[in-house]
Every structure is written in C-alpha cells, then in structure tokens.
Length: 126
Image 1 (cartoon, one colour):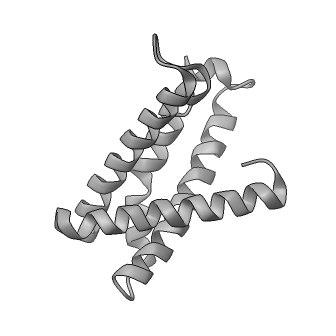
Image 2: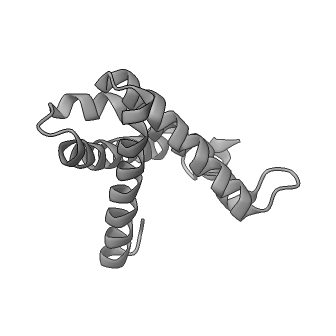
C-alpha cells in the first residue's frame, strides 16, 4: 500500500528514508547536545533509525486517514506513535531512564518542528 503512493518504486522510498534518517539524526544530536551535554553523534544516528522508519511507514495515513478517522486525526496518531518510537530508541541508545527520556523526546520534537518549518519556508518541499 505504501509503494502505491511512490510513483517509481523502491528507490524514492529509500531516498526518502535516508533523508528522514539524516534529518532525525541531526535534530536529535542537537537536542541531545543541548539537554545532556557533549555526546557522540553516532548515538543520534543509531537512535534516529526507528523514528525515521515509523514516520515513513505511518506518514501515508496523515494524507488518507484510517478507516473512520479523518486525515488530521490519523496524522496526530502517526505523530504520537513516532514520538513513542523515538522515546524507546532514545532510552535504549542513550541509556536514559524514562524520566530523563521524556524531556529529550519533547526537545527533539521541538527541534525537528522548528527546523522542518524553516526548511519548508526556505525550499517549500518539506
């Protein structure tokens, strides 16, 4: 079903995943540096795999909706699931307790939202 939305198959899907992965890794590294202090950037790259995959797989529902759910409700649900996946991967990779993970996830979401809006204003494609 996801490949139906992609016009020419697997290559655009992989490129989209790689761009999302780099975007999440960059914003997570910025958030982790701000919240924790100096951390290796490799941890952000490891932790960004799961939320990137989750957002790519669930991103289609923000456009079409899920069954009786409207597109905006489905998009909110997809964002919530992506945040939970982000929390699980951050907690595992950075070895943080849930109490320390929650602020980092919210900070990561804020950094990603601000950078996403800025890129959208500059290039108009995000």
